[in-house]
Amino acid sequence: MKAKPILLVVVTLLIGFVLGMLTSAQIRYKKLKPVRVYFSEERFRDGFYNTIKPDEQQKGTIDIILDKYAKINSELQNNFRIKLDASMKDFRKELDANLTKEQLARLKEMDQRRQEMVKRKREQRKDDTLNHHSGKRHNIDGSLPPDVARY
Image (cartoon, rainbow, N blue to C red; front, side, top):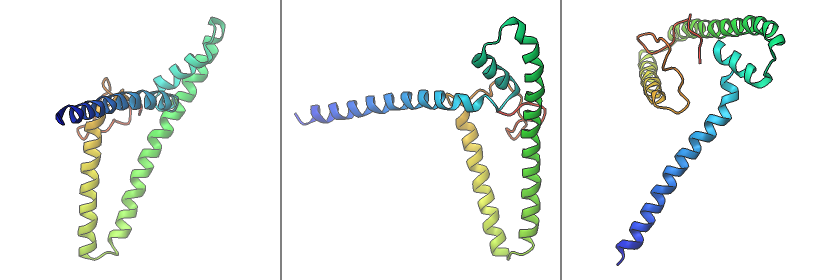
């Protein structure tokens, strides 16, 4: 007798959980879509084309403008990543020179945990509803090469 109400509650919770996940994925997709427009040359162009819907007369001029700024934005993103990586390496060189062996060991552990977390997140994104990397080339470590527009 008590099994029926418990089963009903469990089934209701499971249905709510599944519906919540589906709703959350759709909300994230719709909210983040405008932001993603700027992160690759292709999305940059498509996002603006879909928004402004240029006529045939405007397309030639707008294509030139979009080509110019899509390339600039892509280069800025690539340069940012390169400069950030170089800055972090310099930071660690200076910092490591002033730390004890214990502190260096703790930092090494932190780096390993961070790398594992990044790897797990990368694996999770393969099945993510917002993942659009499927057709792009990746380096062995999973990162995008500099010549491929970042997402």
